[in-house]
Amino acid sequence: MSNKTVLGFCIGGGKEKLIRQCCRSACAEYRSMVPSDSKKSLGSLAGIAGISPKAVVAAEGEKIQSEMLVFSGFDQEALDEFLDLYRTMGIEKIDYKAMVTMHNIFWTPESLYQELKKEHASMKR
Image (cartoon, rainbow, N blue to C red; front, side):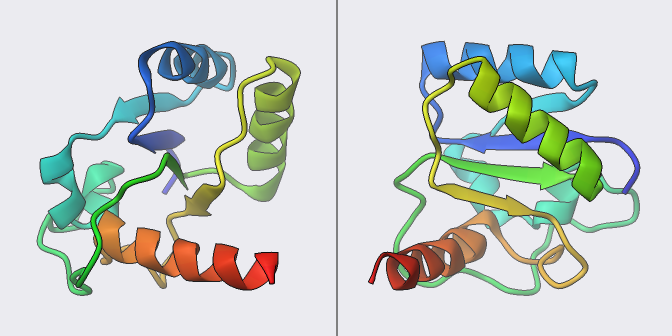
């Protein structure tokens, strides 16, 4: 996972334009996801070689309804730099953010969204 990629789900036009600028500054590729992408594996959407689009962990339940960013190929330093730039540019906060990991690489974006939603709800309690 060496190429930095940011997957954007449910991101609006003006905000997406700013995120694209942020990605260019961070030498990362931005990919705007469409509803049909939510059934493919995160690894294939991020362009990771050898990862099949067919997901192992399929989503059940609610579709992605909120903005979500998924990062691939970022080490901790690069991610911190990206998020610092994101804040500096004044881009409105996105609650659901995650990294593609060896644990979730075969999940669908919908599965990841469900997990992030649960984590977000438990943190707000």
